[in-house]
Amino acid sequence: MVLVPLSIESLKQFFDETAIKVIKYFISKSIFAQPETLEGQSDLPIQVPKEHIEQWAVQALGVTPVGSGSYPVDVIKADEWGADVKMVSCKIEDNGDLLDRDSGETSLAQKFAGTGSELDDLFNKESHEEILDGWSKIMQEKIQAVKDKKNLHHIYYFIILRAGLKFYLCGLEVNTQNFDDIEVLKTSGESVWASNFIDEKYGSVKVYKAKKRMELRLRPSNWLKDDLLIEFQVTDNLMSKNIREIINDEEKFNLYKDEITKEIFN
Picture (cartoon, rainbow, N blue to C red):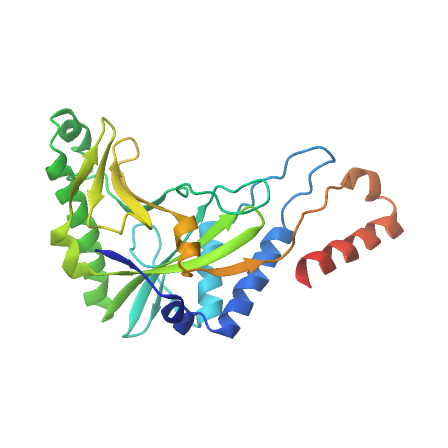
């Protein structure tokens, strides 16, 4: 496999107790920054910019931020390893438990020249192997280039999974020597799925025509069952509050601010 899940023991070699505390703090800050709903409204999805998630890793791991945009990693530990830091959303039951469903997608590679610009034609011709080979090569070349340039021995993905008010963390190592083993698993008019990229128990990888990119989806419930996730739970519920009704009453507003701060940060 190209993408191999890190065991919980391996993951905690990166995210020790201090790093976990740092991540929990930033999750708390993100929840605190979300706008309150009114009574009767459904909870809003918690939004965190990718740049902020990258900074969580910088602070938690004591590593160096690098590059942006098409750069294949976000952070590096000099002369050792680099990692791309991501967040995906997860489907949950009414009680907050993970559903046995795929996560939202995240991009592994995107390019609008070469194979990228020819993607529509390749799909029309049903050249599925050429599509997968081309996009695997894009990803492989980008990763190898940063390994050579930064003298890195290992490349990882650290992924935050957002599941309602629960957050999880997992890791994957990229085995660049296994790109040649990738094969076409199945196809549709819009997508080509890959086999031997990631164990199907833990996720799937496909080239998606519409967005001209290679995408990863995880199967979070299986990660949880196999004890491959670090779990964070900051609060059981977000308060509903009509801010307009209390903001001009200094006593009520200060009391509310104290209450929500204790709820989220304790």
